[in-house]
Image (cartoon, rainbow, N blue to C red; front, side, top):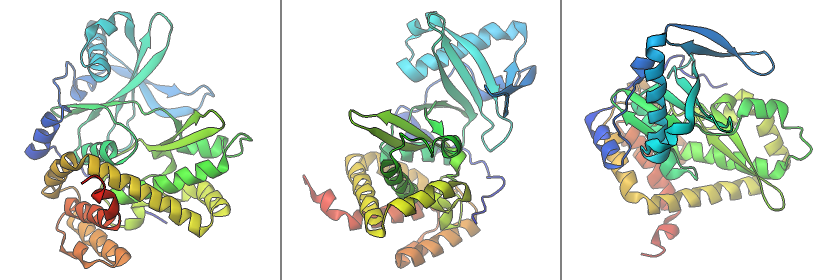
Length: 349
């Protein structure tokens, strides 16, 4: 059974990563910060529609601060969605601000509502952490998903990633008669492979969502990570494979029931090939990110030693043993992927 570190260390954004964020338009001046929101006056527990405690708290500010907080959060939303076009703010208001006191990032979740039709959207305000930023960037570059976020100082603003939380999906949707079991099994295999390639850890069921899209003749599934704090942090390689977390067992078991080993290997190869092609398309951006990451401390020395040893044994490749940082381990992991898909990289050259 996997054992995640109870408290992951917080890693500050170093100058090379800060320069990267500016170069790729990820940094922007914000009218409100994480520390500003921490000055709320009181809070009440937040319950879901069934009356169950969500473990989030709805927070409230003093009357003298509320108007300014609401206005600034609407401005943040316009920066995230329309590159600062404030005309979208005229019909928007802050419906609710929630705070989660648990976990590593202790986020604020802001609900923005359209006053004309009551449609709402969410975004998150968190304390910026280098591990999380590397995780978001790697997701943007190497996965089929695009990620929107803004960094300013020690604050990060993240767009909401829509979908059914994995634990809710496993509990309530696995027996749905309309569930396309084969397609879901295929997507979980691919998701498992994406996490292992880019070394994203802690994909327990509540750290990802299942995005369901009706197609013209059936239903498509996309499993998306929503927590990136455990990017290249743990030493145990199994931490980067969602299949080994016990709360994912129900979906793992029906994958084993529906897919034979040859089919699983086929799906894994397909996903590796797609990642290799994304690397080809974004190789300069990925190199800039890797150059920053190689020289940063993103984990404890003993975890670096454990991970490089386990990956060296897994891939039967001693080059991992020469790595001195998590960034170097990730680069070596991607080199192995590229070497095994070198025919893709040769196309069009």
